[in-house]
Image (cartoon, rainbow, N blue to C red; front, side):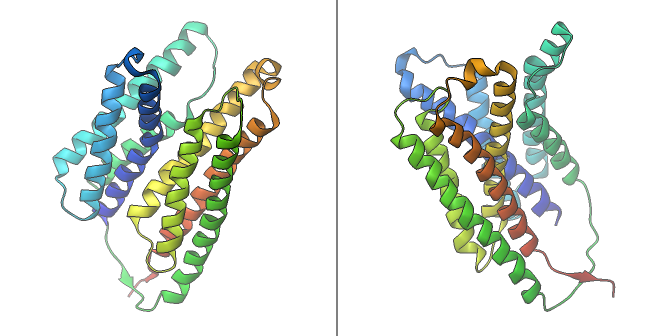
Length: 268
């Protein structure tokens, strides 16, 4: 159980970094030789690969505790440093709160929880043998939300790719929509039979990213108001709303499928 929880957290954290990594690589491909590389780019690449790879290894019981600890500590330090540089230090200098980076705040806390989970021992209770009917209800609920999420993600990708000019939206948003649509599809396929952390953790991580992206955009629009709002067309306003819907549907789908993997327990 301990390895399942910490492995899930590592895979989840790795998935939350995939859009950032993809954005770096997309910009790199667009700018070519003019793209300025930085240590943040390389550290993002390293942490993403390590979290995904060792998260998978931990889920299958083939990882090393000290390695997982170092990776999670490294991620927590990186997120904490970014929060200080981009949030706390500017707030202290200006004397007022500004736009909140929900993604880094939550993933920093989750990383700390992942570190704790490496050392927590859990006592298993007796398990009810027949839990198939109970699990089936949660599987169907997860698949239902995944179906809605798949349709919404494809819709977002189609709107972005068929659009002409956007103010905040780029083609990369369409690629993100296609990416999460792939995981929605996997959740549907495996959700009917045997949902597992290898599907639910990445789906939850990407859905979390879509939700926090919406929250960030909402704060920006509220802060700048009509200066940007007046430059957003109907399609772009729809895209912003779709990010909220995709994030919410993905979180529900992954959580329901996670519940479906659990078994009812009772005291013997």
